[in-house]
Amino acid sequence: MPKGIISRRTYAWVALVLAVLLFAGFNIFMDNTVTTARLDLTQNGQFSLSDGTRRILANLKEPVTLKFYYSREVGARFASTESYSKRVRDLLGEYVALAHGKIIYSEIDPAPFTPEEDQANADGMTPAPTDTGEVVYFGLAASNSIDGKETISYFVPAREAYLEYDLSALIYRLATPKKPKLAVVSSLPLLSPQPMAAYVALAQQYDVQDLGANFAAIPPGIDLLLLAHPPGLSRQQLTAIDQFVLKGGKALVFVDPMSELAQQNSGMQPSSNLEPLLTAWGVGYNPANVVLDGGTAQRVAAGDDPRNPTIAYPLWLHLTPDDFNRTDPISAALQSVNVASVGSIAPLKTATTHFNTLLGTSSQTSVVPRNVVSMVRNPEQLAAMVQPGGNRYAIAARIYGTAKTAFPGAGVASGNINVVVTADSDLFDDRFWVRMSGTAGRPVAQPFADNGAFILNAVESLTGSQDLISLRTRAPGDHPFTKVRALRSAAEVTFRETEQSLRARLNAATQTLASLQQGGKGAGISLTAKERSEIESTRQGMAQTRSQLRDVQRNLRANIDDLGKKLAFINIALVPLLLCGFVLVAALIRRGQGKTKRTRA
Image 1 (cartoon, one colour):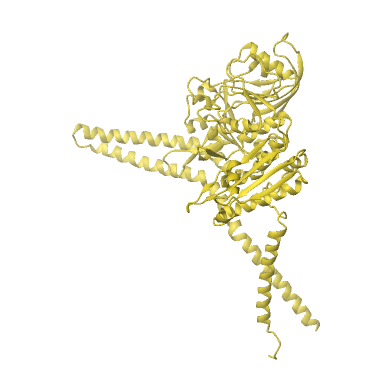
Image 2 (cartoon, helix red, strand yellow):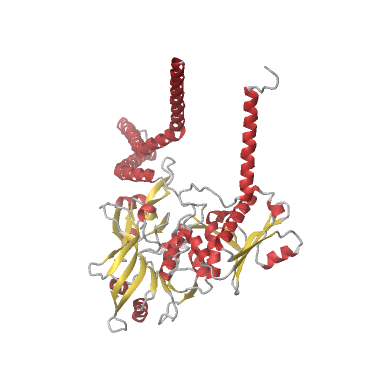
């Protein structure tokens, strides 16, 4: 090879090294200079600022001061903390850019034994201890130009999915120092033995006032009345609510035919009803009936059979986007809601109001008397009660339009109303939607369903604020295998009766065998040939029944297993095969082009 000429192999290696260096340099440059540029391919735009945040920032009237506290030196030793701090810092940078000077931002490193550390403690920051004896400050202090103060004492990783909501809600509270007034009438243990997560969230954003059980009137200045599984109310109290709503007051109502939350506390009534008011609003509701739904039934532990560890429990429902109204802002962005022992509501034929369903059941439902359900909690027996008639039932609805008074002569005769009615109160129960972690002094709510979001969305929609609604449900919700759930539900309906019949036959044979064997032992004599023959016949019958039962259980999973194999093939084999096919076709085309060129030459 002549001197000065680089070989093709050397040239290829040099080009590869330069490409790697160029790629790394470009990423470092973008990381340090263009931090707001990003490509978000998540389903619900998880890493892009929502329209709600943009509106909150655009509507800022007074400056908001944000002080971001982060221990840089100590935090850098923990990869997860350092990564999360970068995301927080980048997101705060976007907020500052979009606020057009209305956010005054500073970052403070509270190094040990410095005035900055004293300032962090004074601003309510909570340091996290490390295994080296050092602490990490990682929080945010915010204030407005008046005297409002809000803090995130520590950015807990468990809340990372809700980072944008937490930041925007903090700024929103500072931007609107006058909180709407919310009056509560409830028989639920919302505050004891410890405050429920939904109630805590309401108290953070609203001026909450508990009216108690003996209220005589709705206090002036109340923006929204929350009736959560209310106790038995007197005519005077019902009249006060009636007049409040007819005069333009908003109401959020949760009634329940069989509140599991109330049943956990002795002395509380299991059912609630506001019959005169609901009828006047054009809503039909029967507190004596409970809805069982095989299509949205939650899966619960089934027992000792390892092949079938869970079973559908149609008394507890797991609602997904197919069960929500996708046009109303209250329910449009919800991902999942868990309810229990629900009732149903429907528009009355005589209604003068509009009925807009928000949450509903599937079509695999049955309405069963409450007193029957309360005596049967076995999942299999409850599942057997579901006789689908193809009907879907409303669990929650927005009621609006002109309504007449429920108590003629009491005052205002009619008016335009705007209320939300839900036939379930277990939405408030923490165990159905949130996990509480952290210490007693700093509990952290980790939602796994949107129960709290539904409640807060309804309050905000009724009080006129819409900006936070789009944020609250942006965290990754569950993405259930809806096809698998449908296949499992259909299979269980198909094979349930056969399985129960076989189990009953097997149990009877087992008892017969035990009786025959015990009879011989108890008499102290040898079994006769006839008895031995009967025992052997019983054993053969039991073996045959077990075989049939295994076939039924195998059929129960057949379609699900087939679907799993198809998905596995698509994910593992199909894409590589398509790529190979693409490369092969490209090679054949290139080869054909080469032959054509040689022929022409």
